[in-house]
Amino acid sequence: MTDAQTQPQTVVAFDEVKNLVGKSLGHSAWREITQDQVNTFADATDDHQWIHVDPERAKDGPFGAPIAHGFLTLSLLIPMWSELFDVTDVRTKVNYGLDKVRFTSPVKVGSRIRMTVTITDVQEVKGNGLHLVADGTIEIEGEERPAVVATFLNRFYA
Image (cartoon, rainbow, N blue to C red; front, top):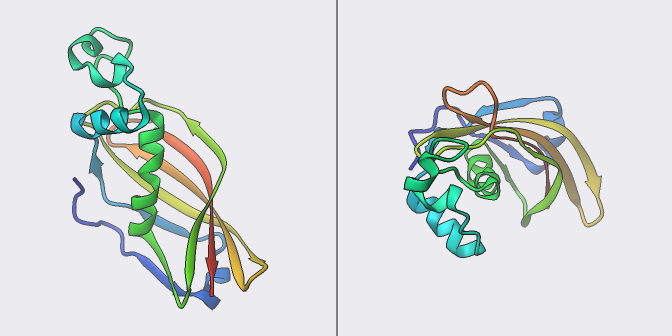
């Protein structure tokens, strides 16, 4: 599903995370969006809209092909984030949430996507933790507009 990783993963110890504010982590490997993946997501979420799961009908639709669900594309943020970043010396890692998400362009089945990330803020939190804010952009190969722009939140506890 993915090409060989094209950006080395940034791995830091817990007490080095604060030094990463403003740092770009580069981009993840490209990963292809398949019809099987879209169909599985449709089954998992009970969203079987024809623009996602009916390739023949979708050819005549507004995008000229079936497209991935926006939330499928967003959910791939997690494995792409893991390709780019890790923190050692922690007991717990938590996906804390999202502050802002925009689905700016549809992802056609067969397209390849990758994510770029910049760490924008790190704050200490109760329980010997760090709250990390990152801006991520999920790009579509060969397209000018990205698929997703999101500010996502992570917590790490030592």
